[in-house]
Length: 315
Image: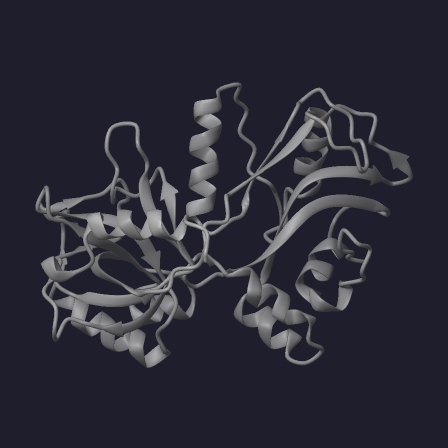
């Protein structure tokens, strides 16, 4: 089994977990098309692309694979067991992908949503971007596979690069997810975080957090959250997401993120048909509870200003 980049650079040694998963597929010969990204199974978050490319180094590949294993989202198949499949319609090719990957937890069929609505497509695009992914690929269901072709049989829709945030953001912890694996032992795998909407006097969600703390840091945080855990959502919290446990808004955390993106699932800045805001690849920097009340956290108005500022070209 071999893995190649689009420039035909061999990358087989970098991704032992993908090689192992492909070896279990029921096919003698197979050519798949997809994209792989590192995934943290404990916090259930995707990992920044820089961490994926760090595997280009020869050392520590197995350590990388254990800490943040790869998931490959397969969206096409061109060849199977000696048969050229490129003449088949995309709809039929993707059915074959689903059949091939039915038993795999590492090689996954890319999420498929059928629509002819630009509004629905835009909402899906924003959803995946807010989760840390690059974008979506739109394909005609009746199209054959055309290698190297650039036409409207398939179109890659990506985010507009808006620049990196230069400042940290203070968020309030609103709930937590219990997590899997080692994180479950700590009592929390990921945190639901929000900012303060001073106009409505409520806390609105902006991100899930799962990185930036040591193992001991997670244990200590869980102890702090124990006295704040609530059975129901607090009256001053507006959220479309439902964590495993709600928290009384009290703990303020300083986070650093790559950028602010539009999001259809977070309520910070969400009004009418306008999507909310999300933090892309956030990580915890420090705790600010000692010097900041929840209402002193970053406001929705400040988030909107930061979003507009990052879109301006750098001088």
